[in-house]
Image (tube, rainbow, N blue to C red; front, side, top):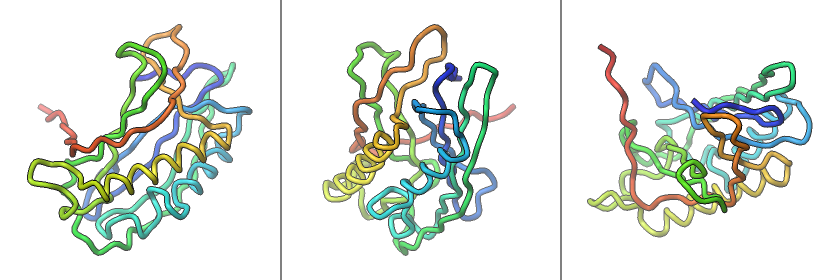
Length: 196
């Protein structure tokens, strides 16, 4: 589990597939100018659901909903939490991928080493089954669209002063600034440990 140092936060984008009992969560670290978790959760939510962004209703299958954003920010006196929850249900009628599939997004940084790399497994809210080859490759048109949406969100967060960072598991490592997001062309899978 990543540790949130003082002066940084962690955002959680929450998704739910129709018929699922548990939500899917995508997380990333961020820097912030002043502590204000409720406002920051709202700001991130608005940018994620804007036109040409990943959680606009038209950019998601009807099988999926985006529930909202939760954040945690670390201060000298401890954690402060905030959230903005307002369900956006997808309006695209294209058939969604199985729920154990994911779009893999790499968090690229200017620093070397495994510790300074990050990734996000985004639920397959879009694209649909028809956007993949038999080898699991996202077709080039859809890949470019996904990249545009996530590049836009990345730029929006920087403009807000909430730039993405890679958080680390062990102190005293300072979070690493994310220089760009790269959508992987190969479909990913989410492996879940079975409870005994």
